Length: 166
Image (cartoon, rainbow, N blue to C red; front, side):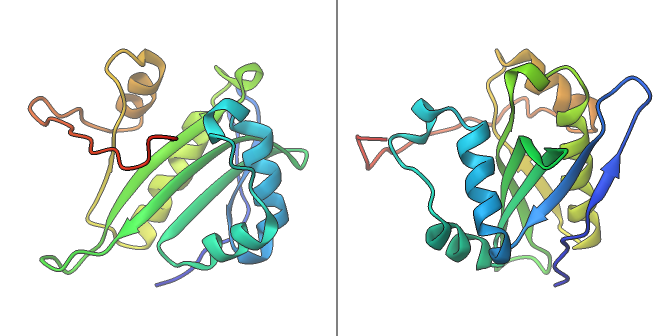
């Protein structure tokens, strides 16, 4: 499997240009800045990232953290996982979280992140990308539909919570 960390710059005349990077273990300090700078404190459940943990997390081939940077300042990220399958020759890709700072929304940054994620899926020959979002999250649904995603009409999501603090 090819590991990509090339900077990918995408631009639209009416949108904000950002640099999208897939972060690797050597980018642990930047990954900490991305999480702290973009993910609201209350959504981190009291967990503050540290470079040692982030280096270990990013060294796993199954973990993907894409950062959107504006002049080296984190403004968005996408977190995803490669899911190996025993019943198929190709892996699946699960997009767990995509976040854009409030002041940077509606500028095409989410679309740029999705373009980078989709390019990674194509280049690494994944069989499918899937994600979960709420139907009430109209901006997210618009982003995913606008980048070629298809909403499931009949699938149901079940949760089993084991950590009540989360």
